[in-house]
Image (cartoon, one colour):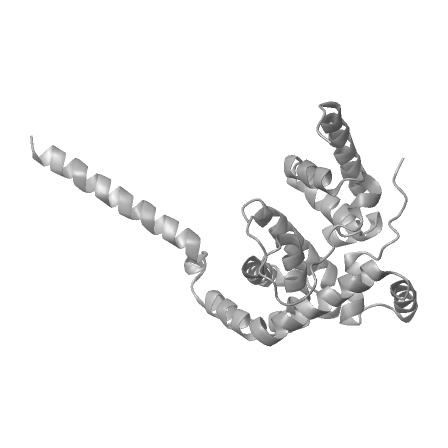
Length: 107
Length: 161
């Protein structure tokens, strides 16, 4: 047996409402629910304030970082953390190679 | 060069996707990274977008999948940005009574079940919405939720509630 439908608005509905992407009837129903549901009203407020924070403080900076990544050749689009791991692995391989060469040269 | 349509997509949805990622990851910096990764992936698959105005479910799917993968590695505390914390998972308690049990369960299920269960139980999408967001049939969604219920029963039988 499936559980009863949730009495709350889904995140997708709240997000579509925030974007103004609901049909007039869907929007009327969502707003009627919000008028009576503190949980959903709080969720919508949190979404709006978090989205506003991104818009004001992070949107442009994030766009520029992504543009830079996309304009790099594909092989250089790896994330910084992954790049450091690859560099560390390369350095380790070189060090091991140098030690082995020295051991071989000592014979 | 970055595509104009992609920038249109970014400007329309990035603030909302950041907010969504922050709710899942509970951390500002991780949410910013996740937003960036979501739109980089969107760029790669941009040909799938017919109309930017209708791209919300698609971009939702990319962000949710990325964040659920990242959750396994991200366990840092959220740094507040000045608003009340999200009462995340308001939908979970109707079906699982114990949200922590659901979260533990989600750590053990395959990714394909996890993403369906997250959208349904944590974000309250109905089965039709989950199907639309993930591009699955409704029958598949029902089947994956049934898999989750079966695993929940097994976990409870072992005394983990």
